[in-house]
Image 1 (cartoon, rainbow, N blue to C red):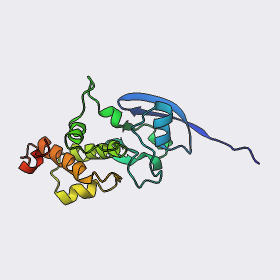
Image 2: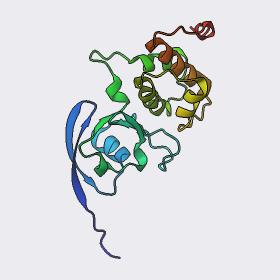
Image 3: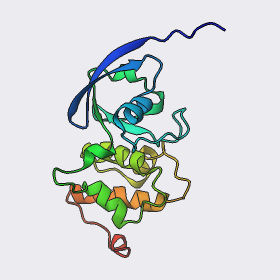
Image 4: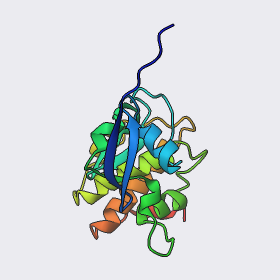
Length: 174
């Protein structure tokens, strides 16, 4: 049996506001780097083929499945995980609080990915239709079938950020 030859490369990026440098196997995924080197466990290992969204992170403000994004591609990038949304005193972001308020967190496995995709959506500052929101959130799987509550959390936060009226039916859960 031939010896396995590994190649490593130094990667320097900003993770949750902190500049980091590490050596990574050139075959390693960004999921592996974030979980193994930095213990950022909000980045979940789900399908590992880019279909479930559990590993979603923001790279330069855009949502990506980190399981199919090589760690070496992160060189020079700004990466945000769920841990990076925490305020300076540990407070939750508005979208995280909305997930709690709308009971959009059941088992919690899919929640970090959904929340980061929601952050990208909300940071656009656009008013999306229900159909557009559903399509933008469609890259995630929730095995607990919490889709309605997740949708409500994102829509409610979008409307509040845009200073739009929140429909009365949104307050029945509160």
